Length: 83
Image (cartoon, rainbow, N blue to C red; front, top):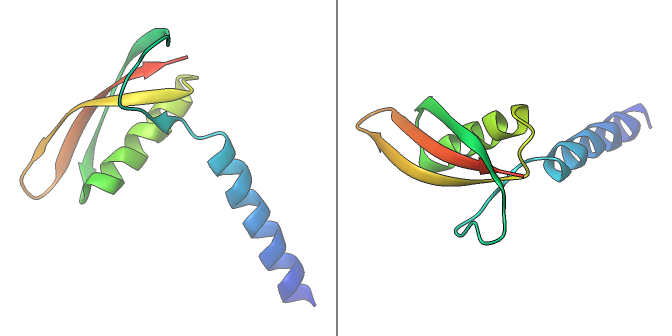
């Protein structure tokens, strides 16, 4: 029973975090640009996107658009952020 309660609690926390995460977009139509963020030391494109989303969240953005991703073993990227 305790395991079920703990599992339910953590699933709830994950759901809350996902609900407030900045969403990656392809087009910024009708959105207000509020800045640029960068992130690095990512092993995959998904990891880089997650890091950029986290940085966008910290700046109060609701969405972000990746402008560039570079690197050989570790990736670095830049994204515009929007309200």
